[in-house]
Image 1 (cartoon, rainbow, N blue to C red):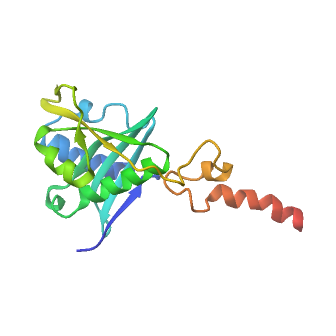
Image 2 (cartoon, helix red, strand yellow):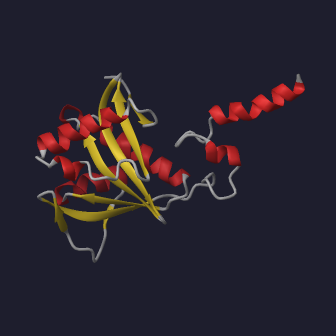
Image 3 (cartoon, rainbow, N blue to C red):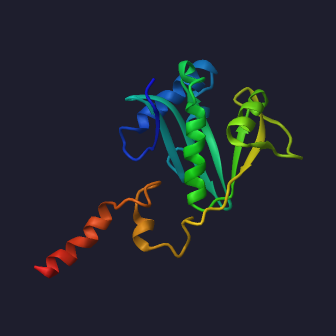
Length: 189
């Protein structure tokens, strides 16, 4: 099997891929109504990741950003890939992005039957004193994972060009880095 590659969704052609994965898993397998799966949070303060094996999109996750914590949502992995490490790869990428952005905690809402998996896979622990709750005809519990502090976390004092680069690609020169060079090159001519 090919390696699992996880990418930040940055282009409009990638959005239908994550929507299709979520539709298959949540609407198809779990009978979740459309309006509950597509809840209005996909385009407001969210980062989406897509996992691929070869060219095939096989998993997706949404990260929403709050003051002091990130929240993982809508993790979806195609049934035939659930034992292949896709969920773990999505977790690794999500936690790396959150830690790089300076977040210390990731919150998740999971079905209680998945607690053992998320404890092993991602170090999540059940949030004490928080009651179980229901939505979309399923019971959920809150879990939280603590992230290690990164020395290279992006802060208010990060270079301006770093803050302008695409989500998750802060160490790669972006299109705006190139535009900044345009004036320098024109002035040198």
